[in-house]
Amino acid sequence: MNGLQISILILVFSLSLFNFFFWSGIIGKITKNRRKVEERIESIEGKRLNIFDGISNKRQQKKKALETKAKTVQSAQKQKLMNVIFNELILADIMMRPEEFSMMWIILAFGPSSLSALFSANIISSITLAVVGMAAPIFWVKMKKKKRTKLFENQLSDALLIMCNCLRSGLSFQQSLENIANEMPSPISIEFSRVTNEIKYGATLEDSLNNMVERVRSADLMLAVSAVNIQRQTGGNLSFILDTISETIKERLRIKGEISSITAQGRMSGMIIGALPIVVSIFLFIVTPDYMTTFFTTLAGKLMIVVAVVLEIIGFFMIRKVVTVEY
Image (spheres, one colour):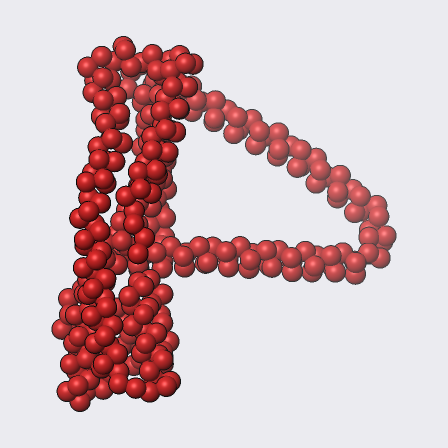
């Protein structure tokens, strides 16, 4: 930090203190004078004010009721937001409380950008750091969720096969769930452990399985749970049903792998084409900074940067749409 920045910080701090004490004194004086006027009015018209005590009390009660209702609504909205964050963290298998994640999010969003604005005074870099800091936790949670769901789906067919063998050997359905919770690796063992714990604490089997579907959000798991719920209502050979679903899931995984192999070249081409302008820009900024500063100091350069960013985003989504195969 050079001398000019230190002087600016001292000046800003001094002005802030001066404004605080100045406006505090003025507000205090106004409040004191207003208080004196109110006391004089009350002493002169005390009898007349007594007539309206009942009305003022009702107004105060109504005001308190509205304030209580507003606080309740605000608390409910805050709790709803915390529940949404909590569910997302559970789906991503992130061992953090919603308050901790929110604090980390705020620090990443405003910490680096504030330091950049303080030390470099570069608006573009500060805005870039703020956007990256706000987006990074979201992408991190989404990547963790996607990775966990994919791993769960890869383990599901083996879990259903174990369940079939348990049922054929004479064990109950709940015992087969406990067997999966004890024998299978994470994350499927964790989810089935939650199911068995919910059943032990008094929840029904259908509700526990449906809660697992809401947590994992897997189409294959939804198919298996729907088959189990229908079988419990109508009857039938559950082991045969689960065996068929297990084979179906294995076939879907095989097809998914083939599609991923076919579209891998297109995805890699899209990543290279999308990252190439950014890499070249960073390289030119390091090698010839005077050449690149023109883009940030002139109006035409700024417009070119905006157009380039928009075209990059459009190209990213177009390539992603081409290489994404729905099945």
